[in-house]
Amino acid sequence: MCGIVGYVGSEQAAPILLDGLARLEYRGYDSAGIAVVSPRHELQVKKTVGRLRALSDLVHGGADVEGTIGMGHTRWATHGAPNDVNSHPHVSENGKFAVIHNGIIENYVELKEFLISQGVTFRSETDTEVVAQLLEFYYNECGDFFESVGRVLRRIEGAYALGMLCADCPDRIIAARKDAPLLLGFGEGCSFLASDATAIIKHTRDVVYMDDGEIAVLTRGGIQLYNAMQQPIEKEHHHIEWEVSAAEKGGYPHFMLKEIMEQPDALRHAIAPRLRGGEIVFDDLKLTPEKIRGFDRIFIVACGSSYHVGMVGKYNLEHLLRRSVEVALASEFRYSDPIVDDKTLVIIISQSGETLDTMAALREAKKRGAYILSIVNVVGSSIARESDDVLYTWAGPEIAVATTKAYSTQLAVLDMVGLCFAKLLGTVKEEEYADAVRELALLPDKVKETLGHCEDIQKYAAQHFHHESVFFIGRNLDYALGLEGSLKLKEISYIHSEAYASGELKHGTISLIEDGTLVIALGTYGPLFDKAMSNVIEVKARGADVLALTTESHRNEMAKTVDHVLTIPDTAAMLLPSLGVVPLQLFSYYIALQRGCDIDKPRNLAKSVTVE
Ligand code: M6R
Image 1 (cartoon, rainbow, N blue to C red):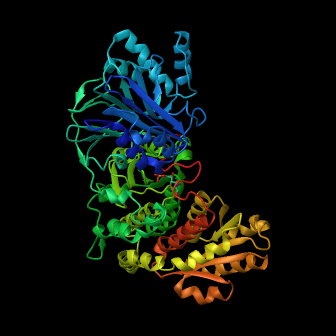
Image 2 (image 1 turned 60 degrees about the vertical axis):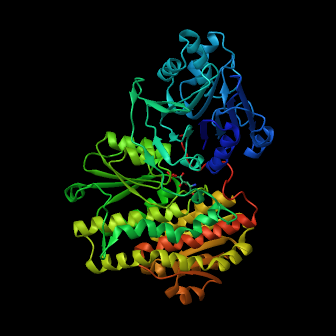
Image 3 (image 1 turned 30 degrees about the vertical axis):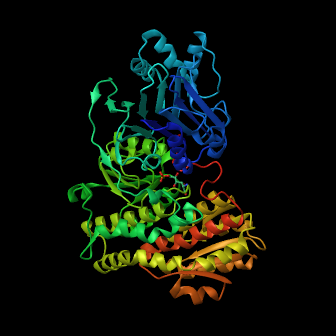
């Protein structure tokens, strides 16, 4: 979604802003712009629709905009078409104020009408422009930038991460946050603003995450934070641990491929510190055994692939804990009047920790008394900070829009939560627990082994990339796995695909199967292998071209019926999707490659969905 970067220091701002924006490209955008205050205290605003390259060309890599303080923005259109005028920064009528904004100003129509009635002329169709115009309006009243910001914040409703410049105060950027991520970076004689640490990590690792209602004033001499009452506050600083190289391609053609290949290491980071002497130990969990025993309802709430992790988790946690687990899409849960009280555990799953629907679901559950345990990748993100308990996945920065290593590590952590709670509740057999823990320790190596089948998968992708419709079928854990395989394929290759529970085929879907239809048959789950085979036979009989995925021990059996078989190593049943997802990720990747798609930045999608 939209990206923000700001800089005030002694170096030329424009190249720093362009570099920061380039590092935010992965979030998805359709236009970009920068505002830099010139040495003569004039606001220079340059913006354009399209890729960053166009913006960089427009300003000759930054050479055309002199100045050591500025802000940059990548826009993902919500209000108003993607075009030059609607791009950020937005400037007030007298050209004195520039504003960049992530989020949505919900009462912008009312504010716009008010300002028009006061004689203000608007240029764009955006909600953001009202912030710039309101700033000018209040500045005309009070003559003070900071006070004007306070007045604006008291009038606007909705979600915002704001960066604001005033030509009359050329030494400062003012930032404000509500329901949209924003962090501050502290440098030597310089200060930074960013929606995502990736934009500024090259310059500083010393950051403060802004909370809702906070305002910050960034100058060369440092950053002063204020609460919503505009009183000065002090906040804890965080040190970003990961390396700059983690957010670079490192020789791979795409971030997605790099992140697929990083999965063995990512899983090692997520699992190894939590395994000790054959036991699962969560040093980072605050939940007490009494509290765990007291839960009578469990929800898993998430969006997209994180929701698919929850679908696998439902099967595994219900089996392990012998209690019902409901999986809910965050966008539905938040408006569903959910049956949640103080005996409910709500497990929130999110890579970014900033997904707006997931955040809203968390708040809804919290309001109703639930205990919130979140599984999050981005350290210090909003979801992590608002949860009662957080388990980090330690996958490192994930840049490609299509999630891979975050999915795998979320799944491993959720499985570990299930096993840990089951041991405590006495609902899992000793042998099953011991076997799962042993296999968890082996998972990174088994994923590595699975990645070794890359060439076969590439070959199948070359045979199948022309299909316009693909079906994933499977039962139980394989059905949940199919949901993720299908999403991966459609989001990056734009091939229509659906995942079905195999048993449902004959209730309608099988009518879609005809000669040459590509069916990806998932048959990794041993207890239902025979049932899976019956469904494979059914679709084969109707002319489907079947590519099957199974375990090594079932390869021969599967190969009797289908022509193409991919395998994963055998493991504990509950961990099969953790291995099964790897060939599906690679298959989608190579199909998208064959089709010439923009793999890391698929059309219409954003990495972090911070609007509803
Ligand atoms: O950051 P989150 O895990 O909350 O994001 C949720 C979804 O937007 C995300 O998983 C999305 O579905 C991915 N593009 C899938 O690859």
